[in-house]
Structures are given as structure tokens and as C-alpha cells.
Amino acid sequence: MLDPTLPLTVLDYEEFGDPNIPAEFEAICSYSPYDNLSSGVCYPPVLVTASFNDTRFFFPSISILFQT
Image 1 (cartoon, helix red, strand yellow):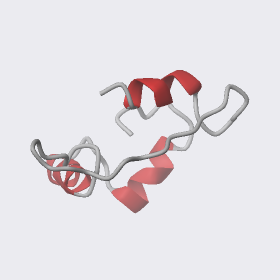
Image 2: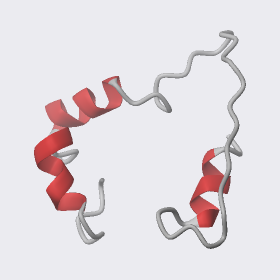
Image 3: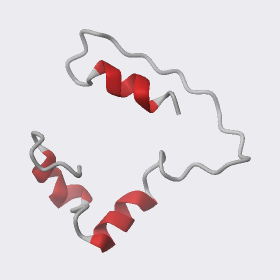
Image 4: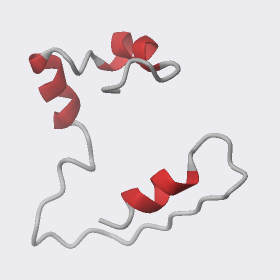
């Protein structure tokens, strides 16, 4: 959402908020599960599937997300 040149990104600003505005950026981060992980907490296992032919997601971005 930080790159307005990506398709549909600016359209998401109305629904989720504009991350270029500090107050709205904080609101977005407050409900982001990726940004609100706590150390020492035992989270349930997650099954992640992806496909090279899935046009909804860029495959390398899925693998990068779950390497952390």
C-alpha cells in the first residue's frame, strides 16, 4: 500500500486508509496480524499454499513472507 504506482493501491486508501498519513498508517498497523506478533507467544500452526500459476499472488512474495 505504500507504492501508489501499483494497480488498485490508491483505490484501497478509501477502505483501509492512506499509509502516507501518519495517523492512518498507525491505524493500519494496529490491525495488521503480521506487525502484531509477540515474542514468547505460542501461535497455532499455519498451512500456507501457493502456486507458480496463481495470478492473484506473486510467488516469491509468499515465500519471503513466511521465511520470517
